[in-house]
Amino acid sequence: MGRLVMKFGGTSVANIERIKNVALHVKREVDAGHDVAVVVSAMSGKTNELVAWATETSPLHDAREYDAIVASGEQVTSGLLAIALQTLGIQARSWQGWQIPIHTSEAHASARITGVDGEEIIKRFKERKEVAVIAGFQGIHKTTGRITTLGRGGSDTSAVAIAAAIHADRCDIYTDVDGVYTTDPRVVPKAKRLAKVAFEEMLEMASLGAKVLQVRSVELGMVHNVPVFVRSSFDKPEDIDPRGTPPGTLICSEEEIMESQVVTGIAFSKDEAQISIRNIQDKPGVAAAIFGPLADASINVDMIVQNVSEDGTTDLTFTVPASEFPRARETIVKAQSKIGYAKLDTATDVAKVSVIGIGMRSHAGVAAQAFAALAERNINIRAITTSEIKFSLLIDAAYTELAVRTLHTLYGLDQA
Ligand code: ASP
Ligand code: MG
Image (cartoon, rainbow, N blue to C red):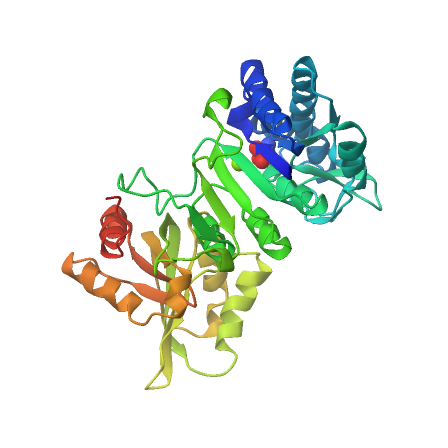
């Protein structure tokens, strides 16, 4: 007997029939003797609709009211699932974020969880075997008493935070994919599902565009060491043996991964733009003059590459999300006299391809192999950055698929 959090995303609770199906998944675990807390998203499409309503009422609206509106989607599904469980003869009760409570910061629409009280839920496990059905995505700011939401995709984070608070053995994320793959299977049909991936690797993959989980949920899992299991909600509840090992990916601490490969996965993003500043005076304060104004404008800078100068001037290249590109360019143009540069080169048709693996810590020459393989395919590399467990390459967007496939094969990730 153990304690589980089961999280179901929007597609899994998209209509009443699917909610009844979720109830069967929950019943299976309850029947196996587990204490269960369920975290639900809003019905798929619901949050988008609510956001659109807020925007339609006024494009510039009060974030506190935005949260009051968008939190309602999860309130509905938590109540519905509680009823569906009760109908199956299972003790169940719905909980809104404020009722638990899930305390958050005051950053409306993108609040961070600051604390979760799991006492009452645990008490009810013990006293009445009651399943807690918790509305994901929402919390409360203690001082103001207002409802907050955690940012899009936030119910993953709710689920992991609840799991930590009730000392769950595992947090199961039921979703419309059956796990985390070595890369996007739509680009590389030979992509493999990973049995296990380390928190750190998943953090890189998630932030690089493997959109399985909200990044914050992985951070929380890592901090509290909550194993997170990504699995499909489309498997029929009756086909699953609660004591067996279902297909899926376990995101866990490094120590639990025995035979790790050097490279675990390849992530990519076409949503990138490159800005190169040419012939900057090479003197102290120049980088600050460039990145200060960008930070002030809340523009997220990603790759930064600077040359070592010879003649007193240097080139500096960085990337920003494509959506931020016009603002970023404007910011740099405005600061031209202060930075002191000759010319600006930009490109928006670029992509970032990243190779990730904790094995890189102990293996040399991993990136060099990639450079050779891409050269053979005539793919030009515009910029390179590296970290302990990852390296990223900026290339022309047109070559993204070819590059990803080439690297996937190169590092032995293709399915047999
Ligand atoms: N319903 C929210 C959203 O669509 C939260 C979630 O599903 O995780 O972003
Ligand atoms: Mg999601």
